[in-house]
Image (cartoon, one colour):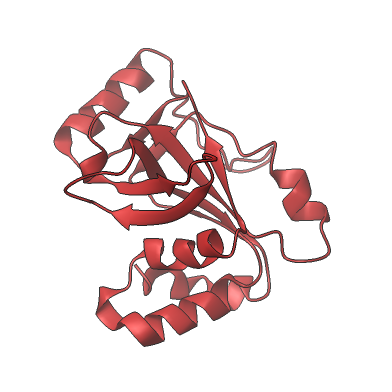
Length: 170
């Protein structure tokens, strides 16, 4: 994972950013968190998308304390400590690149995005956006990709690119 963001680094150095893995599809919105990310002078931490799933062993899973605070993330555990999957869509503050460099230096090819997310989680600087009933699909399997196609066909997902602006070519 660590190599793909490097392509964006020259364009995003020092900026707060959204990382959205291309195999994720959601109807969830980060709108409630955006004012904090735009307006805070100091680093606002990160926001992790999460949702209850039937097969948590297939995902990075949230670990919670007795107060229901997110305290860790375990990647694809055999014995999941919860059924809350952490989705592949994240908002990060401007410290992202430094944390990424440090973790990739420590982990090398074993690095995963969960390693970086754990930095924010363990320091108490990660907010979990529980998307509840909103749709979220990790389209890493043919079944999930088919489910996404069916949601688009049924009008639940809008297939229109969200980054189109007035005046852009069709």
